[in-house]
Length: 178
Image (cartoon, rainbow, N blue to C red; front, side, top):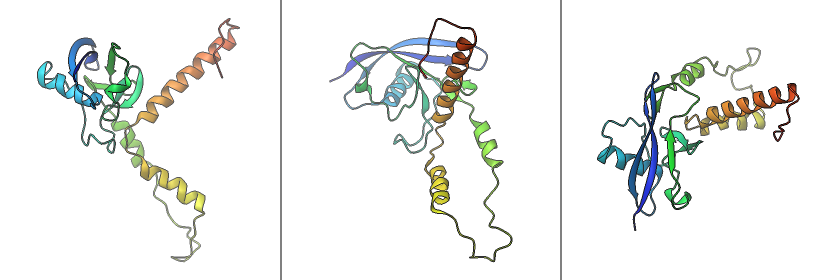
């Protein structure tokens, strides 16, 4: 059973853009990425969107959905109340290339700057030992799907921290939670 949904999709590039309103049918079990593909196929043939696996494994379809950093392939349409408008924008932590596609190349350049592990020079090969906590810490990076949602959340937390500091410094009547 299909239901009509109203979407607001960011269209534009690094210099100019805005939200465009569209209506699209949504079927049971669909995710936001399905809706974006339907809009792309039927209403906005030139809509730029990055995606690859549609299984939450690659991180390509990261974007902001109703202001929250999310993977479009993992965001169920059923999670939105009936009649709620869905706003889809590019990740605000990165420069926009076109529409929903952002330039995340900075992250890859930074990753190349991280030095490789070198065992201690005073030990013979095979004598170096790692603590279990160090092994677990390095495994966390192997789990990363490079969606960069964490960078967007980190930016939002930094902004909130700055606002809170400003309000406290100016004896504001407003109180933000810690």
